[in-house]
Image (cartoon, rainbow, N blue to C red; front, side, top):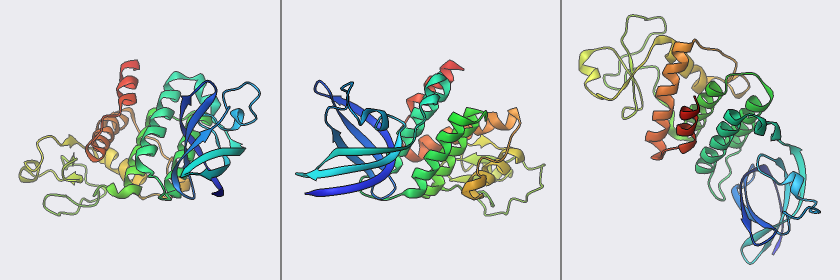
Length: 254
């Protein structure tokens, strides 16, 4: 038994009993942590305002019989304003779900938590296209988790892909984990590969290779945006072996 203190974001809440909740916190120090919040749904609860979904804060937990109990919370930032827009809210819930799959119990992954916070900030406090924010978040967190695609050479023949070559009829292969050059022989390596323009390749390279401070500092044309929204969700599904239903819901909204 004893107290532990974590800094993290509430990614999931499940009601229990008449006034309690189970909370999932994605922490800097210990990855995903589950805890029990007694009485948090009472109107007089001092924990409610700082321990809800999308709250980022410092949380003190008491460990008893292999279970954590929330005892105090200090709010650092909340993203409640995201709830005012159904599209941004749905993207935000998608971010939490994907982060919960990437960040594992007891395994610190502070870079992923910071990427989640940065992406939620972009959703809640900027006018940037939420669809592009989502594509950046998905590809970046996949790359951080060991699924970084090969973007500098053909995954079939190994030929280098030059930066200024517009004549190539490139493709992006999920099974090949990256770019396929325009040769007919290489294209046969994956008949389900997506068409990839040089503009989309530049965008992918920026997302994967730029530093964390600048990862959102770019813009794309509508055509490139469309390409990214075909390529990245498919790459996400291939690597995570999961359909993210919030993405389907967003497609229906659009």
